[in-house]
Amino acid sequence: MEIAVYPNPVLKIKAEPIEDINNEICQIAEEMLDTLYDACGVGLAAPQVGLSIRLVVLDITGEKTGERVFINPYIAEERGETLEEEGCLSFPDVLGKIIRSQYVKIIAYNLKGEKLEIEAEGLLSRAWQHEIDHLNGCLFIDKMTPASTIANKTKLKELEQSYQNNKAGVS
Ligand code: CO
Image (cartoon, rainbow, N blue to C red; front, side):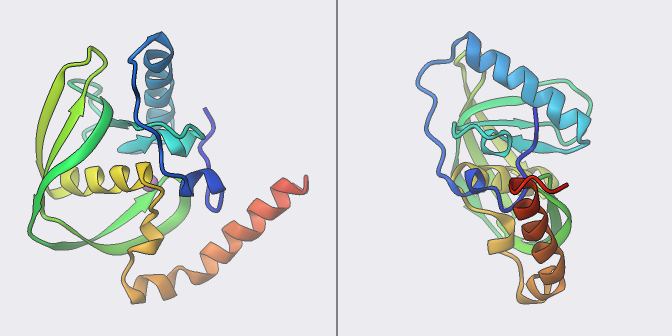
């Protein structure tokens, strides 16, 4: 799968809930996991591969074990505050500092339709908040500190220019 890069408009669309966990969804999840590992990322949301559905793959250790596919995830509880730097596969070479909740409790479903309750802190908590933002069409550049916004201004302009060039068929 190809990763949608900023400013691809699909990244700004609020994704639809998944009503039925069928073979197609299982297939998409598998391909998204391959795409995640190929890109050496920790998480990927379906809108990042051009699909406006509420599906996230997440593996912060890269160990390819445990639950890694999450359907219709949402934040049930959150508390605390932490400021750390993060990146995004849809924003090559962009890093920015963002305030996130320190703790989150996530409710989601696995591919068997079983309900999962995940408590997360640190990097996992940050990754979850980042991916759920993707499902809501919210991007990390919209949440960066003013200093990070300024630091990334040129890089974002470059990404916008290159997106326009690609669309126009210029390589
Ligand atoms: Co991202």
